[in-house]
Image (cartoon, rainbow, N blue to C red; front, side, top):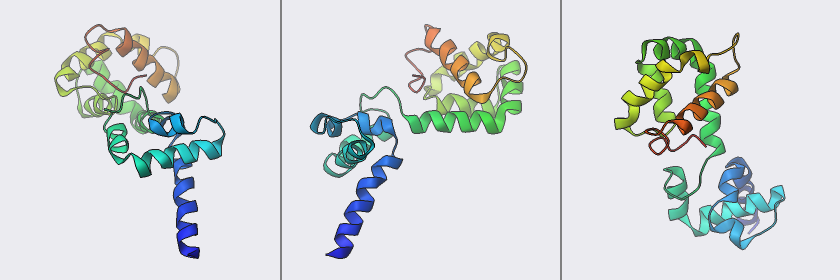
Length: 159
């Protein structure tokens, strides 16, 4: 019994590490309407435990949730680790690092050529200033994608 209680507590608090967005989407927060960290953890655990198909949908971006904090964190980490390579790929309008970023931003494969052209065309705007922070680069790229008629609906993880 003691092991079951410990496992339940650990599982409940695992929701804290799933990210706030997961706790604010899906059936969990509809059932539990409070906003404290504990209730976010319980809401995320409720989603994962009682609605496993929702959890899968959230993971592959078909749940109807607009964004995932985890995805944004991955994008920022990628940009941080690959800033120099990304800037070279964007200046050329092609490259493996740029394709990786398009994938992390949820762009459809068929949208990649347009994504690459857009980043090349908007390079000076994206890399404006001296050594912009990765989060600033990410925000600028998101803004360019959202304002681009062909990409706004074809790149799902840009806000």
